[in-house]
Amino acid sequence: MRASILADRYAIALREAIAEPSKLEAAAQALNAISAAYLAEPQLRFVLGNSALDKASRIQVLDKVMQVFNTPTPVLNLMHALIDRNRMSLLTLIATQFE
Image (tube, rainbow, N blue to C red; front, side, top):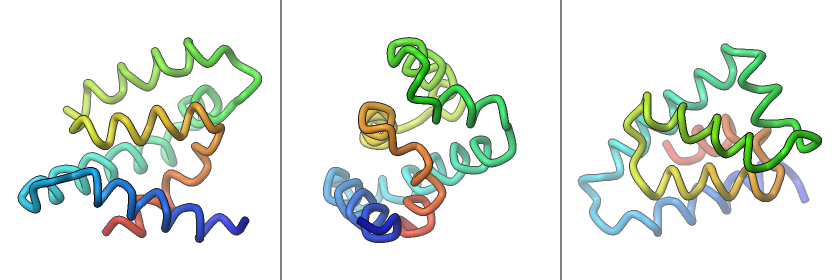
């Protein structure tokens, strides 16, 4: 399946998971900040995107990053799903589609 189609699906699911329209902006800001950090930091990309590494360790690193950005719960859940499904490479596309 094409990456853009998957990214669309994740972005739509995130939008649907956020019940209050007023929280969409906070989710978009958090998602964009996380995406920017992911692109800017090769070590972060390596850890989060490397399916050969222990999933629990990757989630632990992800959770620490999420704390820095004060990430809303739906975005945190999305990020965990991306780790679980080894689809972190879709993060920037999802952020773009969510906007």
